[in-house]
Image (cartoon, rainbow, N blue to C red; front, top):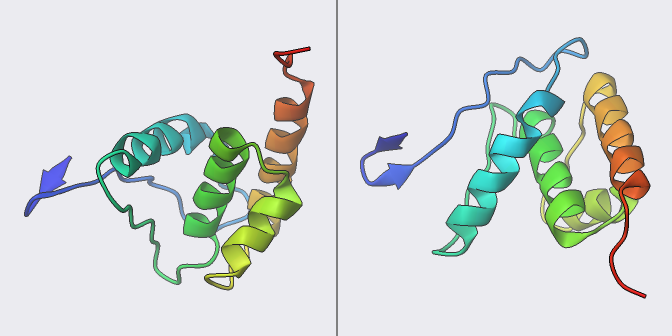
Length: 106
């Protein structure tokens, strides 16, 4: 989507532990990666802590190869992120999935 010269993607998730934010990790991470190639990216939600934090943490784990703890620490250097417990469980599952993926190299 585009509005006033800004490209954006909407992740229609409420900040509830029962919401499945992980279903949007692929699209959100791809969008962030594409937009980072041409400049800065703003990821936001109402409070800027749970939903947006969860998306950025997922991005850092997927695209930068950080562990969940490293990704949270990196975010915390810039903003106090606090994914709700449901999102945190999904991020933990994402970390397990990423660690189980076949590794390239020697």
